[in-house]
Image (cartoon, rainbow, N blue to C red; front, side, top):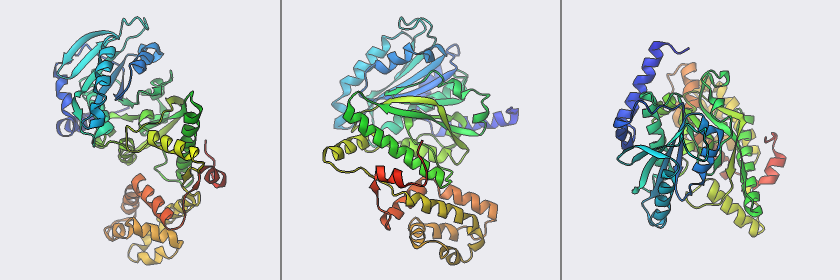
Length: 422
């Protein structure tokens, strides 16, 4: 049970975040009525989408669970965005048709779908955000779109308009299961120490070539996370924005989504994982539409497009060598004794294989040790894990690759790995 002192501190943290780091859209909520109250909040950025994802939500049982869906309709301010501005206008108009507009302020509109003809049991609403008339800077992309939505959710939680402390983040191509909200119940023992969750997922397309390319990329993602788990990394989780949920207080402590055109989920989770557990919900499975895309510079869409091109050319899709994860495991185990050698780190380094020594030097471990000379062991070990986070882990893996453990065919990597993928 959260005591009053803890609750007050959480409130102060959230208020400070909103005052100093939240996006200006939250100011438009000043006239939002206290009578608009919802149990859950779901954030969806939308660019080049049709209204189908909203219709799918209304048809689902989730719409019967008092959910506020925050849809951030956005477009980048580059030529690519301007080519598709009419798509955003059409989407906004079609969303407005799904119910009755009951509140509007600046670029925010609240659409009540309580009596939507698609589902007579619906008791939810859509908070539509217009970020196409004022386009998003292309370099800030989907990261800013997600941040706008999540910041609005935090504000509405503080004012009592949203009751659950979880922000659910997804995308228009996601099919959410019936147990999506219930899995995040406040009394769940599984989430006792969780600051974020990642749901199970799979991709699907009726087009065989796209489906197979997505399946290979999905296997790569599962292989990578399984490798991190095998190495006993504390950062072994999926970084997919459409399967992510997070605690509002932790989100505020992490200062929100980074404003990036891609990788915003990776960097947010990297910060959240230092505050608590990232829990995998294997029994909550989200179906994702498999589709190639160039809307972001990297991620699922571009990767799938690349795999399809390689397949057409008869080339293998190359991925990390399985020995990299064995080397990572050796490294993390060796970290347990590093504090004892902080005055003479060379004596510790020479106990490791040469490629691990090279990789750790390449990512700056020696500089870290030099700054921790006076630290006690508990503090040193804690700071080491914070320093060697998911980003440093990825840099370590890339260094090992550059120092000889080159990528091999994904299927061969999976077959040779000393661990299995789920």
